[in-house]
Length: 564
Image 1 (cartoon, rainbow, N blue to C red):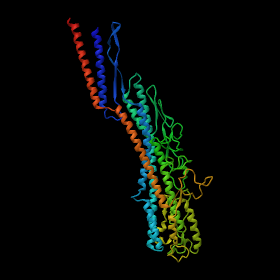
Image 2: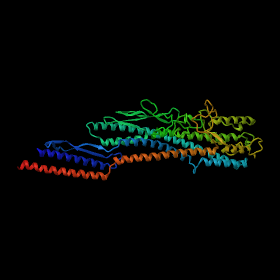
Image 3: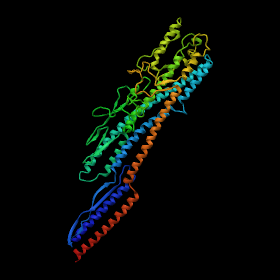
Image 4: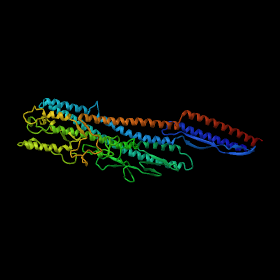
């Protein structure tokens, strides 16, 4: 009987070594599998049988070896740290990507830059002041203004197009998140079924952990595992996965006519993110690529008529506070204010009379809107030929027209008056002040140069006032600046560069931390071929030893049973 008992003990060793070889082979086969965590066969003694007693001490014989479990070598605490920091990293990657694209659109300082065109416009105005009636000077001045405004429109169009691109990214992110949620839920079900008898579904757990890593790119997640092995996932304090149930995110179109979407809970229809407070590292809510996209894009395309309250996250604080503004709308508002102010200053200054066939009649505005900005019909520009005997009536109509178009002069919607670009259109530029015959008078152009260099307070007060109780700029407005046109634009570009640099530093900092945590995870859980080959030799020797014992016991039993 002892031989048969010994055979059972040796067989248990044979099976344990075989399991160890299988686990080792599985590790080596998945050395390059993304998300795979190395596995380890845990062994323990099966128990002992008492065969006697000697001097008060039990004499025992081992009953063999058993494989307790096949476990993953994984640090769950490191996993949570990785996913938390990875979420922050991707938030800043979304914002940095936006500022990088904005810098490309602005193309400063070496490309087709607005700053260079502002300088060119100033130089052409100086040349025009030396010969206000010169055809060449007037044409060059108009052409420079046309180039400047077309570039401004191009920039605003580029910002608008990029907003639409980010909006598409928001939609894609919502779809990706939902797909991953359902995949995690399905893996939860498979793991629960596979482990119902006490086994470990390690490969399925690896797939689920990889999905949680990827999910942390998009949103900040909190998760926990229940007694059945299912992972329940939360974000923003709400359940995304709770047992067999999944709460999807849906893309809801904002009602402001922008066509932009925001993520909402599928069961309540409420927005996932309440973007009404500063989002920064100090508040600890700077998490997730999706939130970064939403803050970069903003809720609408802004212009000079957009309220600063709609651009600030927390309208009780200035948009200049880091993390308190929608990135693209803030720039759109600033550029629109600048370009609109330039258009109004030039139009208001060049309000003298023309020359040539427009002599004695008020000049037409240099800049006019392309479209209405409030849904009303644009007023028609008066034509001198419609007032053959009453120049005064024409001049009054032109004054009224100039006032009526002001509210429509916003960046992206301004063009040089098409009549100025027609043959002989330069005659309609209102450069003559007083005596219509004094066409060489440069007082109007000198006034324009003075206005151009004049220091102005930014942000500009709207035509109808700030609309606040004290008549002052709202708390959400940028910090006041005093500068001329060119300096103000330089400050805008500098702010974009400064924010981009801040985001790059955050990315560098978080990337170092995420990489360090991931390296720690890999040091513990990654497959080392050298270590696995060592384990393979160990289990192979154990298997061979057990096999020899089986052969020996088989021979002994054969002799006892068949030959004695």
